Length: 469
Image (cartoon, rainbow, N blue to C red; front, side, top):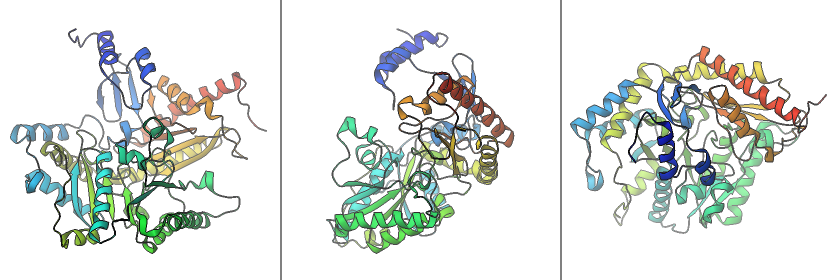
């Protein structure tokens, strides 16, 4: 069969016949086929049927600079024509990679020291675990190997990264997590806080639980703790007051490394370059991806601190660092990243995220907080979410079997709005490109409100829910 770009039926059938899609029911996809996108500009996407949508998710929290940025496309083309590829193994380097590494260290927390490039956040998290293990080995503590993450955390899909992710649906089909990968509380004050408990006291209790877990496992066996500053797959759960302050005390007490997974929160999403700056985090390692190129081409980075680098630099065995990928530090990807950072700096996109993010949350609260289904409006910067409940006063959950999250996604899609649904809870999230305007935020909320009203009507009509008095 030859591809006819004008024939949607042929394209759809070709996709069904040839492709396995991520996080997709394979039998369902064989029946329904793909939703084919064909063009994009700013915060808007157009599909093969000619319908245009507002993408309030920047795809997967990643198109930070917005769609259709010729500056990034031109940088990719220029680099491809000039010098498309050579590997970075065995000390090889190229101009774009060198400049990008130096540039990152100028915007990262000052105690960070060295950057290792890869192509995805999953790869970077795998690399960070290996770097942590190597660090402990050089220090003469080879038994410090266990990794602790948070329930509902998301750190990627490679075998190690999926083991760290605290999502059972990512474990069950594959027999994961691997031994030595543990999970502690997710730290969501709305759901896990006790009646009358302050956020500060909640944070102390979460830290005490982590402390107890490390003590039970044996501090000499625990290598590192990994956490997203704001949890993505848990639908934008920002830290309670004092959360990371208390957690970092426990990590320091037990000589446990701290990995800050900034794949989503990095590069302006919260209105600062990195969440570490916003929440006063002092990690030993950081994981970067997504917004580093605004996803125009794949790129990620693992970053280590001065403390870790000094151990590696003083290694008495002078061990070879036997890790890397064919595309690590790819010239085209690094060129895209440098052009993307130029846009962020030149157009004030991070400052815009701070201003518009505050407006977005304010408007969500003003327009939706009184809705009878609305339980919580949460998040930070341009990383926000809503969570629906059956009863606002008692926090009674809507029946998860109804899958209201994905039903609301479908109803918003009817309104030509791309939001995001979640497995296992009744949340919807928003993370638009950082170039979004207040007027566009107003339209996002209007379309989401129409979808929410449709869902409410369905639940009432079907006798599944009725407003409380």
